[in-house]
Length: 478
Image (cartoon, rainbow, N blue to C red):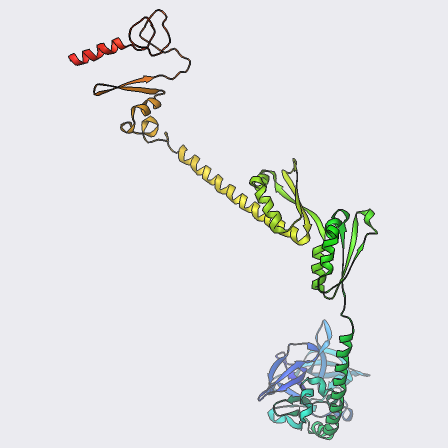
């Protein structure tokens, strides 16, 4: 069912009605020149008089509906526009746009050259409303309900026979509803309805048998094969095949793997080809991941190598275990770039896991180093902000909290103490630094500062018992 919809620019676009509502129509524009939309009846008109142009040919000066291009870049987008025939040359007409002023005068605005049969008399079209839509219904037998539910393709034969109609299937009421602006179209539908239902039943039975045959054929035919081919370095083929063929045998046992072929004809060039045949692409990809071994170098800054390896190799062993790589080799330092190659050997997936863990660990190490640097900088600022790092003399300890030994230690030596009566007697012994120790004389030998018992000529002793007794007696006298 076709209509022409008036646009804001003033011209009319051809459109196909997809549904009839109470006061509007759902339309799809011809050749998709604009998006589908819902339009009111007042915007629409329909062509009710056909072949009138043959009875009343156009002539110069006529006001006509001319089908002209609306897009300069695409001549396929055309619309009907009110225009005036200025000149006719053979089968072509020169038409000019017109503007209806309030006094009924027509003024020329532009011109186009179009085929004469694209000029249509305005009286051939008429405005439509809800009452313009006519309809009829065809009752559907129960055995055909599921057939017509399939969609508009089931009405294709009827639509080809009767034009300018809209056909919808009402599953609830079990009937085919036909709508049109033309009573003649509905009359044709009534004539063809019995034949249409008979043909539809025959077509349904044939389609059902065809579907059953296709199902049986699909069950007998082997499933489609999916093919994967890739290259593996000759040095990696031992890992791909596995010890005594264990790895490739486990891949062959995967459900869905039909065949695995190894082509070693190019072994001299340093690689072999492996071909995998499987029932679906997921299985083929899984088999490839298990067989495709390779090596990849991951760059690590030389100053981070120790932390990357970890104490007793714990960190790097953790990466190997969790990623699934076969092994890792640590190369020599590159003096130009300051980087060290960590060469991982394994499947593509395991190497990707190892790369992920290396990057993660490097970021952690970098973050920890930055925190340590900030801490050291804070300490430097803290100690450089004062003249002395201690708020007290004596290396930061108040004197009343120090014992004799601590005070002697601060002054550079150790203290020997002994009890004399009820008093503490302290003497600071200078450290043995190679310098002579002062003393108060002694025997001829002048000996070095050993402690001796009272009497005798052991001279040179730093202290003797006699002077000490004199000092004690003197103290008692006082």
